[in-house]
Amino acid sequence: MSSQSNIPYYHYETHTTTYKVGKQNYDNECMKFIKTECGDDELWYDDIKKLHPTNFGFAYRAMCNTYTHDSQDNKVLVKKSVPVVIKTTNMSQVKYKNYLDNPEEEAKILRDLNKNTRIHSADCFVKVVDDFNIECLSHITHIIITEDGGLDLKDFIFKNFIRKEQPVDMERMFSIWRQLVIAVHLLHTEGQICHLDLKPENILVESTEEYDKVRIIDFGVARYLQDTGKPFGKKIGTEGYMAPEVRESNKYNPCKADLFSLGATLSFLVTSIEPNENEIPLSISSPEAELNDRLSFFERHCSSPRYPRSPQVSRKVSSLLANIMCPCENRFTLSQISEFDLN
Ligand SMILES: Nc1ncnc2c1ncn2[C@@H]1O[C@H](COP(=O)(O)OP(=O)(O)O)[C@@H](O)[C@H]1O
Ligand SMILES: [Mg+2]
Image (cartoon, rainbow, N blue to C red; front, side):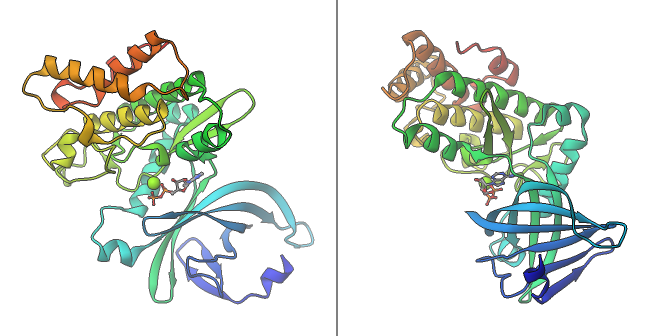
């Protein structure tokens, strides 16, 4: 701590807290530490390491150490040390590029979600530790700090299977899938929120010896369902995971759009190939013929020696994908998806 205390600070104050951001540093490239005060406690975010670039900044891994004052008023006592992720967003870039990302809304949505007792106990959305704006070099940067939820789904599959040249464990993939379906169900029903950018990079997996815990992150473009002030007619999301009706920027049902992205994520889970909507038969001229086309497409698409499974399981996976990654008129509902047994 002592070496850090010598570093001059940028100060930033709100009505509740003073934020001090280590100088020489705050330029998105190398952030040394952040200190915040919360009542008598001091929170030091340090051991900051770059994790991933984000749309308008960086995500960093860090440790959050809580210091309190002892009876002699020495502030040396570490109450707890928690791994966190710090996501920075350059707000002028967001405005300049006219993007729909809203990091302040993202923090609010995550806090609201975790206030719901059912959602809180299911623990399927990452928890916010803090969020605030800092002003630096004449621009505002938003900082959101969340609990570290492990690897995103892409890194998880790559590190656990692809890099080790191991076959992908279908049981683990299906367990992740079932947790995802429950999470999206809670999001839409209890949370009354649609995500609008579901994809492997926005899904975290925290692995222990016996279990892979799934959590959804990145609510930067998520919306409250009753938010009628903002009509859902905008192209939001990521190519490959975006429902066809969203790509066409028609007025669309945001929950149905989330289901398409969920299906595209399943397609990634069982193939580790990024979905390409241009290849999927999606015309609605003859729904039945087209469903058969899609079934054979997914059967071809999903057959890979890296994914050992019985022909029966392969057929089920293909059938589920053909009924989710389809025009919204024919798309399975969330209950149909939940009831669909993949084993
Ligand atoms: N709480 C977290 N725990 C672990 N990794 C995270 C966490 N939050 C973000 N990440 C990682 O940082 C990446 C970018 O964060 P994200 O919120 O998705 O930013 P963006 O809006 O730019 O996509 C994610 O894909 C994930 O790999
Ligand atoms: Mg993301």
